Amino acid sequence: MSIYAIGDIHGSIKALKTIFKQNIIQPEDKVVFLGDYVDRGPDSKGVIDWLINNQKNFDFDFILGNHEIMMTTAKISSERLMEWLHFGGADTLDSYNIGDEPNWIDKINKAHWDFIDSCVDYLEIGNFIFVHGGLEVDKSLDEQNKHHLFWKKYEKPIAYDSGKTVICGHTSRKNGEIADFGHTICIDTYAHGGMWLTCLNVETGEFVKANNKGKIEKGKLKRFANTM
Image 1 (cartoon, rainbow, N blue to C red):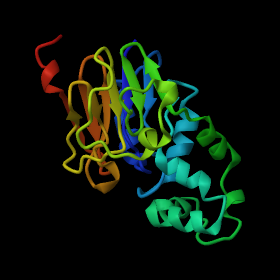
Image 2 (spheres, rainbow, N blue to C red; image 1 turned 30 degrees about the vertical axis):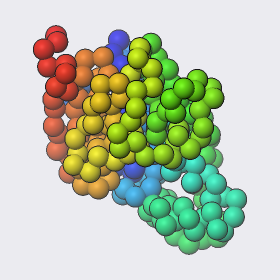
Image 3 (cartoon, rainbow, N blue to C red; image 1 turned 90 degrees about the horizontal axis):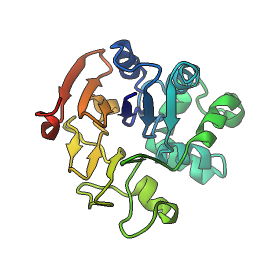
Image 4 (cartoon, one colour; image 1 turned 60 degrees about the vertical axis):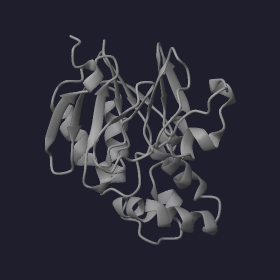
């Protein structure tokens, strides 16, 4: 069994499908998605549909992202709705063919709301911790502040635990390159912005990237280059 992490999808359905068409990920493998399934990209509805349908055939785990939080809190008030629309929610509603309908909440399939509600704050597997944003040092996982888990940008993260590697997204690497700090690996490689969606084998450092044009790039993180 291999352990894979997939970065911020942001509605990039073609890139997501292209990764799985490579047949690298097998049904017995663990795949951890790092959040931000919706907003900004072309087909947020299609992404959630695909994830729900394919979790029957694969071992998927889903981390919550700040864009799912915004989508959920948009139900509370018109102010929250406007904030979400500004940060990509308008693209999401367009993918549902909703537009500016006042009853937009009921127009979204309940299974999609249930999917968002099922996402977890973080996941620890062996020597790896998967999280959307990042972790605050000197605090246990169950003491983490929501701001750090979902919102804080980690351009240059600090090591959280000498025995653990943190795998995260959220801080988009607009050059399309994985940011490997040794103790932390950020794989938000700006899929919705014309770059790549990254799938990383966290144990071997091998990765496959796909974009919304269906192109593929494969490689291995430099520090893993001499390992089999």
